Length: 203
Image 1 (cartoon, rainbow, N blue to C red):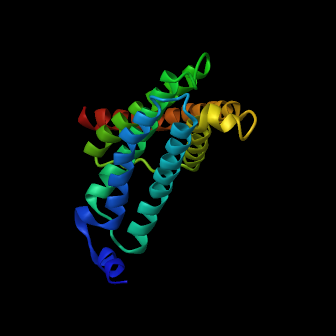
Image 2 (tube, rainbow, N blue to C red; image 1 turned 90 degrees about the vertical axis):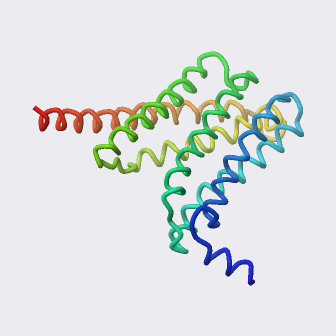
Image 3 (cartoon, helix red, strand yellow; image 1 turned 90 degrees about the horizontal axis):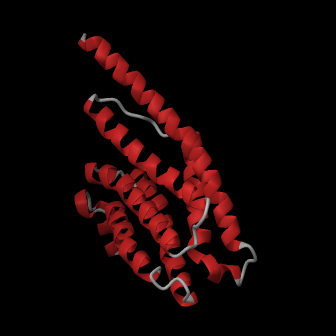
């Protein structure tokens, strides 16, 4: 109980929400290493377990930060970075293992390009003191992407338990990619509008 109370009181870079975010970043090399043995069922299931734990921390760190009033600048910075690193690393490894192949690679490319686009836009708009709120569609995209990656990380090992597991993951990846195109255009349109307004004021 004492250690829990200390975790609740602790703020700054070593608060519990930030530790969960650090854990999500540390999980990335472990996932990458395991997916170098894609034919090994044990490696696939272990990777899935780590991925599920990382996905849970993605929800918990924000919830705990709000519930315990432990929001911090480092947490706001690292949380989206950790998410993007996790998604990008997994997509690259899933292509490497042939879990994502053929036309489905285009879905992965769309998602990767969108992450870069939105990161660049957010960084530039932050200099203009403009925030871009997360839309409801973007949350749907994140959910579809989350489940797609879970099915695909399990891959062939999951196919032995759930028929068409990998195909389900590919379909959900395409759903996430289509939602990604929509939300990416939404962010881009918003960014261009602010850029035009900034140029107009400057002239």
